[in-house]
Amino acid sequence: MDSEIPLPPPRRIRHRSPATAKPSATGLAVSSFQRAQRLSRFDDRSSQPSSDPALFSSDDIPASGLENYHATVSGAGRKRRYRGTWWGEQVLDPKRKRADFKDKRNVDSGVWMGSDESGAESLLPSEDGSAWGEDLRKSVLDPRKSGHSTPFLSEVENIAQTRGAFRSSEESDAHRFAREVVGNCLDKGHESIDLGDFHLRSIPSGLLPPLQHLTKLPSVREAPVSENVFTSLQPFLSIYLPNNYLSALHNDLFELSNLKVLSLRNNKLAEIPSTIRRLKALEVLNLSVNQLTYLPWEILKLMQHGELKHLTVRPNPFIPIEETQITEWHCKPNNKTEPEDEEDSSPSFQPQEQESSLNEDWAPLHVATGPITYMDMEGNPMRDSASRNRPTLTLSGWTSPVNDAPSLREVALRAVSKLPYLEQTTDEELAEYPALLVPLLQQAREVRAAGGQPCSVCQREYVIPRTEWMEWWDFSPCENGMKMPRCPGEKLRPLPFRRFGCSLSCVPASC
Amino acid sequence: MAPSTDSEFVTIVSNDGFEFIIPRSAACVSETFRLMLSSTNFPEGRTGRCVLEDYSGVVVEKICEYFCYNEKHKDQVNVPDMDIPPELCLELLMAADFLNT
Image (cartoon, rainbow over all chains, first blue to last red; front, side):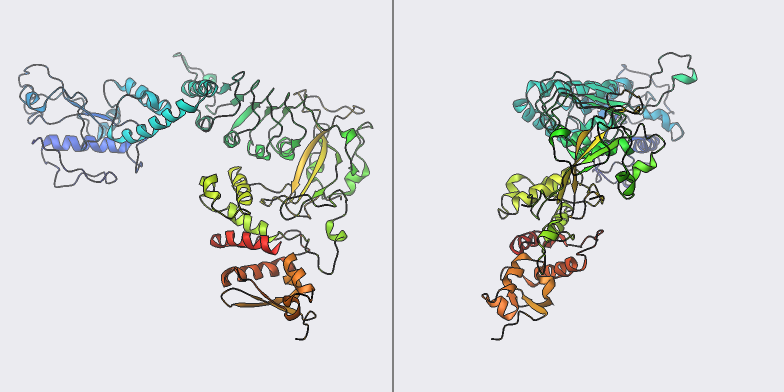
């Protein structure tokens, strides 16, 4: 076989062109091997392989077939091994030259001569198969450490290296340690990520998204396998971030839809974003020792419809119910827990309350509703917002501009928030737009980054809230994981939940 | 010129000459138009004809569509979304600010 490297076909076309395919035995063996390789690793990857390129050996020895199997072995030379694609050949060990290799040995080792039937065996890339997997994991998880530069991986590595350099110059120690811990957990398949006492002031970007794909390692260690050693590999993902200085939560955190336990104890959080509704699998949430004055209404929904069963929120500087204006009491906090008739007289309000009548002692109990703040088209509170009357009634002229239909601004913003590439626009790009649009566009971008924002009454996606009010709910059975049903006569300890509506008619139905 | 404040319809004109005739009540969805049309001190109020110098026919058509949409769904609770083509949404945001709606 000549030493000329055939012209590489485009990377996506994986078949060997008939012009270059040699009808010799070696050619057939090579192509069948390559087919097996293709099927195994490069089947559906169109651009980038997800794994390291395979190692394979050369077939440039002319008569290495079965016919001269017993030919004399002159010097036990190793076959050359290539890493990467067969056309963009790159000699792994560049010291060996092709010329002196040719006349040394004519016998093929047979390691790489798997037929079509033995395709499964050819999955093993080389004798250092274990090291191969190790390489892969290192280069994927820690791109800065990867040693080899292969044609496929080189550009990825370059990006990773530049990013790494960028990070190392800017990143604080706390962020680096956090990355190490997360990387370690990913490596070992630990499902509980402890980032406590890390002095984190913010969650670095890109830290959490890989955890979405965390895989537990199987626990089977010894040979006698009984049935009960097989457990679910679905991780029970827990993230512990206590005793940090977090003042805001990154949206990445709420992307982890399989997160079960989240502890944010002893941080500087002043607000929990309503995006928390996306953590649908959340079972345990600890928000104690923060600076929260209210909770998002979405947490309540997680308790009513989700899995959230263990919520720890005290101590926090919540607004005390005694000091606030209450427009409607649903049950007296110091009275018995019997809901008043008002609750029953409003059947459309909180239908889930009626549904869960079986375990009413467990369900969160609506205690009171605060006054509604109406907001104008720009999201600023209206002057007469304290009044319980709809502004429509107070402004009732011959045609009132205030009505229930969304404003043109809102309609256009909803269209903006659905634009593609919105989240990729930077503040600099936004600054080129007219000044009055910039805050609106930023708001739309935030909503988009949070994955949309459904109205708490009508579930419609909105950008600018038009109504806002507080609701007091008592959920002492779930608090602190006490798991004790509410006993009659117990003093209720209601907590404030802030709720938003998307239009002026999205208000508590009993108002 | 005779005052036409009692006329039922008003005309909205775009900068490229398209005219849209819509009910006065629909146009008054916009606070700006309402003030313009309610006073005879402004030429708009006298003639019932408003010229939007900054917006082309395509945008003004969408604005008028919105007026009718708002008028139609004024008192409904479950208002269906209005379809806004993406290429118009920035101009409509500007218009919404001008029209105060």
